[in-house]
Image (cartoon, rainbow, N blue to C red; front, top):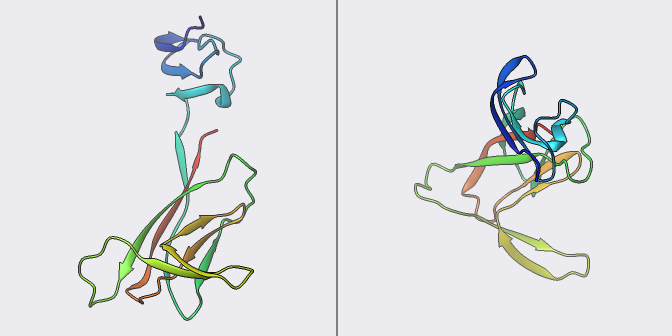
Length: 140
């Protein structure tokens, strides 16, 4: 069984490191992808893009990352809706879609994470007038 956690002296410094299953945390050759956590990392996650949006007549707004992420490394998005002045208490929103075959359906409010953008969908009711977003990428 591999050593998975070290708390204390390691490689001439004091650290907290945890490795992924099957990896020996005491190996100095481990990459960031083989570690679950290391206090040596400058950051455990990176907030790389924040901002606000205001909806217009478009059905969605694309927030471009400025880079393209590969499969398995897409960022996470936190979206906080900004409500109209008449909407005081609110938990979710609905978005209507029509698929390629002309079939319509409704789904809860969505933020689609794509390789190069986050697509934030406008609600059908008009209660969500915009919002604030934060995009985060993991360390590995």
